[in-house]
Each structure stands twice: as structure tokens, then as C-alpha cells.
Image (cartoon, rainbow, N blue to C red; front, side, top):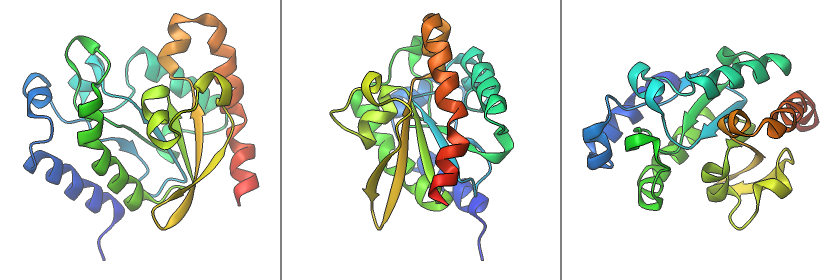
Amino acid sequence: MTTKQSQLDALRQTILDAHVCPELAAQATQLVMGSGNASADIVFIGEAPGKNEDEQGLPFVGAAGKFLNEMLAAAGMERADVYITNIVKYRPPGNRDPFPEEKKAFWPYLLKQLEIIEPKVVVTLGRHSMEYFLPGLYISQIHGQPKRIQFGERKLVIVPLYHPAAALYNGSLRQTLLDDFIAMPDIMKQLS
């Protein structure tokens, strides 16, 4: 029986072998697949790696990652309990937003990641990851509200949150994000 982690490792190799977004790969240090518990109940999905993530090969290790750690702690969770990834697995040059075609190229691999991990809840961090699961909705209107969607064979709960980086630029979002995070354990309780 293969473990979930070995399936994720194989998926990482598949992405490398398929040369997904070669122009992005060419200017990135490495593929940033994701990190955390391969059997996590909660998966956090951001948009794309930044400079620190590209250097270390781990998602959310810069300033936004520090704030993410703080919020996890406030909600009584640790990084080791959850899985963290991004839609796009290579750093876009100059930290620009990922282009729609880059997100589209990586989307099937993100879906495969979720199939392997089988989380109860997917937390989208920012509008780039939210719009794929909840198209046509605005994060300002639905942040922190669990939405149940049909996801392949199973139902999946999506909780859209602002991106932690947004709180670094806009102090008023900081408390909003913290409040949404602190509600996560209650959302998990309601599901089980």
C-alpha cells in the first residue's frame, strides 16, 4: 500500500516530468509542492510561491507565512496538523500574480493533490484560489463562510479567507482574518 506522502512525491515528479509551465520553471529555483500532514483534515491553498518559498522549497515561509503560523496558533492548530500548498507551484517572476493560463496548467495537479490528501475542509487563501472553487463570488462578501460544493465524487467544504499577505498591507484585514481563523475549529466540529 502506498502512503499518501509517497503519492504526493510521485505527483511532484509527474509535474516535473510533464514540464508544466516551462517558462515559469526556468526562472524559479525549484518546484514548491506543499508541506504538512499528507492526511490532514484541512488543506490551505494560496496562489503561488514568493521569493522565500522559492528559495526554501516550502509554501508560506515569508512574512505572510509568519502571520499564517500566528493565526494557526490562535485557532489551536499547528502547521504539522494541516497541509499547505498553492495553485501555481513555481514562483512567478517579480512576485507578480499568476496568469490565468498558469493557474489553469497547474489546476489538474492541485485537484490530484486534494484527491490524495482527502481533506474535510479546503481553505482558500486569497481570491486566486477561491475563484476556482467558488467562481463568480467575492471574497469580501463570503470570507469565513463555509460553502459545500460537489467535488468529483465527494462533497467538499470550502472556506474562503483573505490571503495573509493582504493583512500585511491592510491592517484592518488583520483582525478579520484572525476572527475567521479562530472560527475554524468550530467549523470542523460541525462537520464531524
